[in-house]
Amino acid sequence: MSTEYDYLFKLLLIGDSSVGKSCLLLRFADDSYVDTYISTIGVDFKIRTIELDGKTVKLQIWDTAGQERFRTITSSYYRGAHGIIIVYDVTDMESFNNVKQWLSEIDRYASDSVCKLLVGNKCDLVESKVVDTEEAKAFAESLGISFLETSAKESINVEEAFLTMSSEIKKRMGTQPAVERKPTVHNSLRVKRERRLDLPTPESPMSTTLNR
Image (cartoon, rainbow, N blue to C red; front, side, top):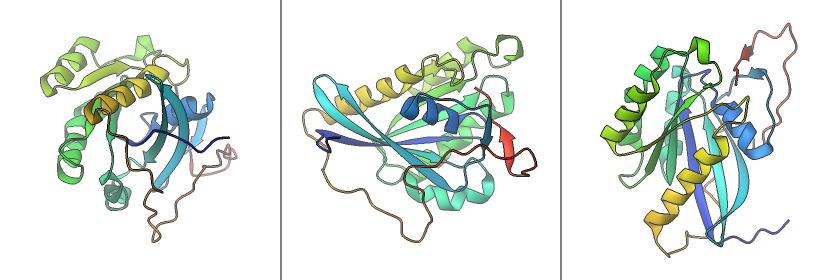
């Protein structure tokens, strides 16, 4: 597989634990889905190369842990991010209310020019939905950022979410390609390059259900 690319975009997935960040990444990068999933510990990432407006774009997508105890670890990964996708669960009002806290994290750690996208995941769970689409859309519009509802399980709008983000980043960058160099490696942290996505055993206390 060719390693040539015109742009290298670093994307970050943030949001509360169990909203489906890892499932969105798995669906986009590998076009697969698992009901039972091991919670992300620290930070993982995957890479996918796409074609955008006739250009080859390499996406380095970082999946961050939503748990508070990993906040210090993951904060360092905001630096150098071109785009950040804030994910909430449409069946969990608290995860939507916490979006404001995640936006504060972005303001604190990311660059002022970073692109942002608000994503309401698990939109296939219509009967369990508690976050109104129009309310979330209005909130995103008030911030001047794009908004989509997705379902990692049913593969609804997942591709669109990452392509929307990539297109916006490319538009902001104009015709100037990103610096083509190896991304910074945080040697002090244990980061899995291409994460091995094993199903946990039923007895595993670490297993959690991150649906859709």
